[in-house]
Image (tube, rainbow, N blue to C red; front, side):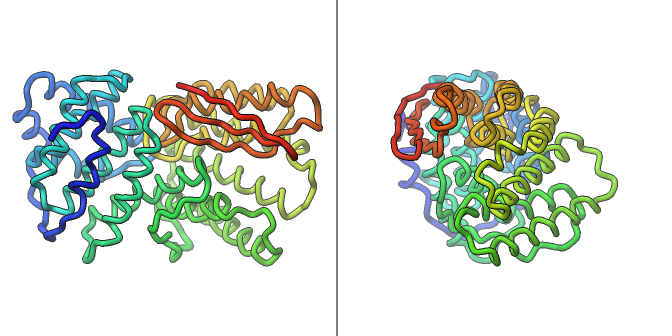
Length: 390
């Protein structure tokens, strides 16, 4: 079955389970030998460029090792990888070569019964939908993938890696569109000491999600104190890490840490003009973003775009906003956050607020479409709606 929009058919083939294992795959070089010349070239692009982007900040065994190995013997994964690489390389949602391989991947799944293959396919399809600008479809696939993970028993190591990937994506989605129930439990039993930056990142997800949904506004002092203690403990564990040399990964984690601290301070101090008095803190955040961001055209990790957007929305100091917008303009596709769209959405409040203090934007709601979004900006008593494309 061939479809013009592959995401439409996903629900028809994701769901069966036999519990069949997937060990013993040959190396990725075996996959290249099974492909035509154009497909082999795209597979090589995936190995050299796409995987590098996926590990912009942290090594990821799911993508670096397991996906290439499975592609060596599973046709649907191999075609999905080729499609992903094609869309990544061409930066065009209309790639006929990419669509052909995307459809071949879907066709192969019609006869696939391994839940392990279904999970991997779902993850790759999410990435393809994001590259095509179909973020809403990607979110639908994400929710479906969470359902597959939840239905699994006796998880293997690769399932744990897939679940971790979906959890990180879920936090991104929560920061983009608000509350989203992705039904994957946060790993609340975190070690008090971290052995790696990757462990520190995973622990930070819990705290980010606490602030994203339900948020800190209106919370009781005891809840704020508990959240503050959790953030302080993370900071101590992070500061105690030894032999950490990855400058960009450290900057990314410091970026989120500082943003979380500033946001917490706003609600514990109760100063309605707190954001306007936090210029030094926002400049520190922008510095971390400049170190962490900009080098990759596409990755699926936490990125700098949501934090820079938040800086522009909260701090109305012209110099701070200008610096934040300059760094934001250099970002591409960071998971579900598209740098071009984010910069456009962030830039409009600067124009809309030019009338003065009374014109301050209070809320920004994003309703996603295909390579377009409906944006609703809210003041205290009125709203304005715009459509933006990218």
